[in-house]
Amino acid sequence: MADIVLTCDKCGNRFSVSEYVAAGTLVCTKCKSTVTVPARAPDLPVAQRLKLAKAGPEPDAGPETLETVEAAQYRQTMPDMRRSARRRVRRRGSSAHLVWPWMLFLVLAVVLSYLRFFKGAADVNLIVKAAITVLFVLHFTVVTLAFADDSFSGVLCAIIPGYSLFYLFFQADQFYLRAVVAALLIAFGWDTTTAIGNFLHESYVSITCWIENTDTLKKSQLMR
Image (cartoon, rainbow, N blue to C red; front, side, top):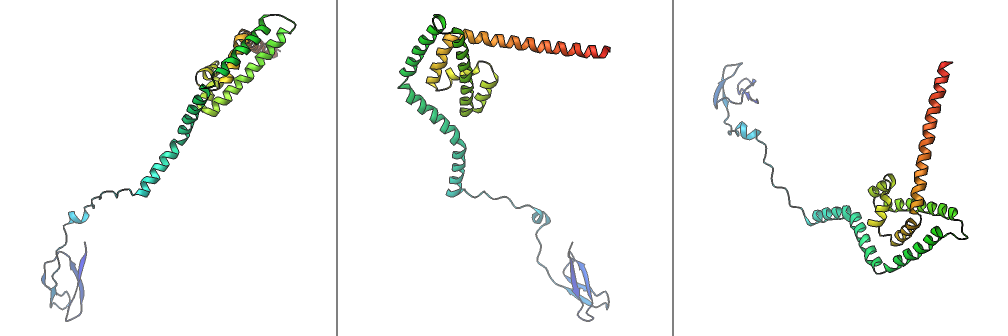
């Protein structure tokens, strides 16, 4: 609450009174003479003085602001747009030459099947090992391509058995790589499956024997 300071004209005494005092005359606290209280303009009600100003309408976004927002949105969507456009271009460009991957597949399938199933002067076991090695190299190639195209697909190809084949034959646009892998699987798919099964079985047996030998060694040390 603010006070009003009054000055006595006779003795010069200064004293304060409440701001709500009525206009008129008062008595000086020192010489008891009358002091005139000046008239004041009425203040606004307290409710209006404490009322928060109403928020006005937001200014309209100017052309520069709209252009900046649109540019930011465009930059965010550019990677997906470029990837989709790249896929469409590859599909359109390769569909006209789809006959060449088919011809490569047929030639490789015939040649590799002959080398695998028709025994001749060539060493079949050596050819089978070489073909399995090539399939594993191509598997890592597909995983690398999947990571380059999409990180999630790359992770799936790396951790889920057989997903690299699904990605190559149903999602990727690598037609020549698809033809080579398909021909190798036709000729050496069963050999590759058998080799993987034998490797897993041998690994399981080795780990089991290692665990049993470790337990036996610990028991023998405790008994001493």
